[in-house]
Amino acid sequence: MNSGTINNVFNGPQRLVFSETTAEQLAQQLPKGKPIVLRGIGSVSDQAVTDQFGSYLGSHGFRIVTRDTIGMAVPAPERKILIQTGDALTILQIAPSAGQ
Image (tube, rainbow, N blue to C red; front, side, top):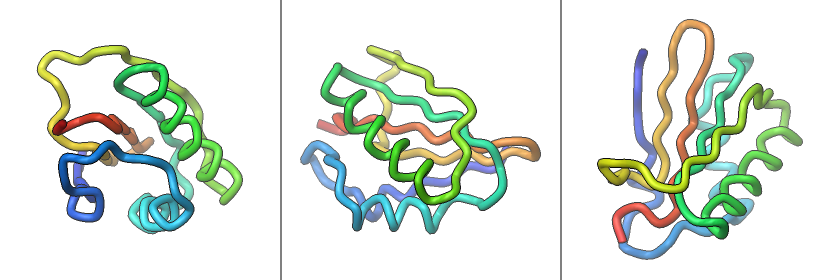
């Protein structure tokens, strides 16, 4: 599985919040035509941000096949957004409070 991060776009100690600009940048990094497993990590408010990104992607032609909700990960994620692409699907992990 290839993996990459676009954390250079979302760098810094501040919590990641949804914006259309950020969602557009994210969409440009995702491979078209591959199903996406959307994984949100964090609190209820972090999950809401993940849902907003998922809704944006869904309305722009991306197919979310699974939505995973993880309250806490050990070790804690270092990146706010992580993209892992395999032959069959893409895993998109969003952890809005990572790095805080």
